[in-house]
Length: 313
Picture 1 (tube, rainbow, N blue to C red):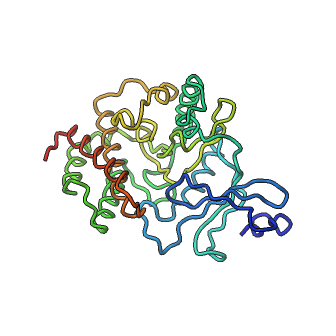
Picture 2 (cartoon, rainbow, N blue to C red; picture 1 turned 90 degrees about the vertical axis):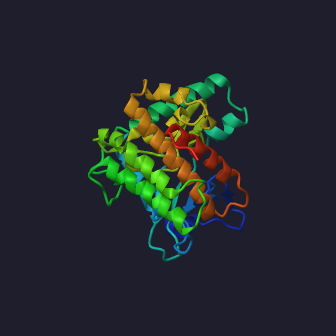
Picture 3 (tube, rainbow, N blue to C red; picture 1 turned 30 degrees about the vertical axis):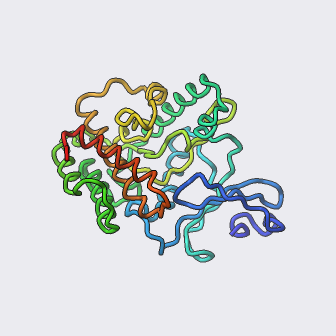
């Protein structure tokens, strides 16, 4: 794989050239040291036989599309892609090599207390500003970047929720609510989705642990595989507006320039958090978690959101 990407002269000697990076929950990622000493990153998708959520099929291909869009149409820093192999000739999975970003993970460094409060605040604001720039990309349709697209955001978002509910039903996941209750909430409040008429690039998973910081500045954004064309209010940085357990979104929203939400915007934002809570619960079955920590957390968030929509058990 390294030879195909970089040529035989750069294939490392010995067997200690790879170190797994274990922060992610989906792809397998390695830091690779080439023979000439340069560090690069190898990212490998799950092979076809591994069960994944419907939205996660061909997700690495979506990430490559997203990174190309970001590089071509914004100034947001993303890693350089050196080589992508989607042929599945060498291994039974998609993979790509990209540059290694020599910087700290913003979220991890902040959590460990290695960043001063003013640095955390400024970087959070920068993250919001970068996210706004990402949202400046306008797509040809709503939904997956490469299609199939939908003419309306309501249609695209409804499919996203339905796919996840179907995944949960197939795996017999107990989400704590009748699945049709989730559908009913969406049907009752779907009119708010019709206000979204411009399909904008939505990163979906841009938070502190998917960004790299050096000398107090965000120098790279990572993990673009979940990007869609949709409503910028769906961005992960806004989740704390609805769900306090996700942290104070103040720095992010300030940097983004988000003001007071209208009534319909608050409804949309809560629907997006509802979707996230369902994903968190359902995906625990597909990830094979050995404890119930994430499942219990997701159940708690879903209960909170359903109560906000006037649902009780």
